[in-house]
Image 1: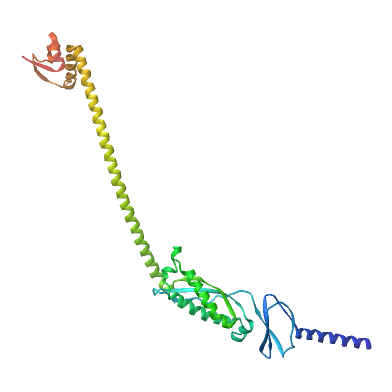
Image 2: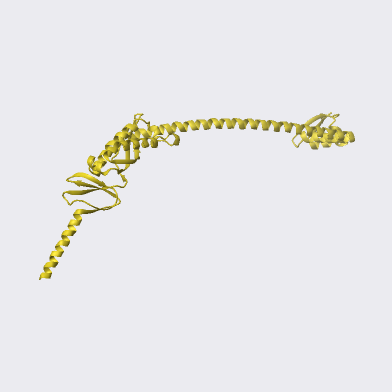
Length: 306
């Protein structure tokens, strides 16, 4: 009986000791900061992981804050650019807690920090967009792109403004950059008109270049044709000269035979089965017919005029 009573007392002390340890000792993880408060007021901040102690609740208590980088996604917001163009933007800041005590005193928790970030970033984006034209924020030309420059400036100013709240903003970037739904149709029509104007310019330049090429080609063709005609005339002249030399040589070798063959060639040119020709009897063409002239004339379709 006495042993049982002692065991109960020992167990009670163990349970009480366990709760006392939990009330006094606490562990800090490497992914968090801990602020020890005394009657609700912060008295010290612990940034290093390990096992620590405090006075038991409700005298002292702990508040834990995530010390890792956090990404916050605010709602989409509409802004006006320098050239009076409405755009809808969805941005995201990358931030963390730098001073947990100051953070607790100013914004209390993560929800309060997000509200403060939303106000500051919206204000800075409104100012930044008002200093840049839309064409410098949305462009395919790398040298004319000003969006990264603008966002770097927004990040710098935002980080300076959140320091009094125990926070640090590492980066602010744009996730969505779009036109309002009511303005999309007019914007797309304007973009289409601009592209059509560029296309007409390219077509005009192409037609002009094509005309130049055709003119140059025609010029080269005329030069080639002229050279070909010149060469043809030279060749023809050389052929005629050669023919004349051949005729002259043939005439010198046999004048009568030459005259005979030339007469036959003349017959071939104007006499056929439907030809009727009246020639005087002393014609040089008929002298080669001899005594059979009448017969040949009749058969050839010739009629001799006495």
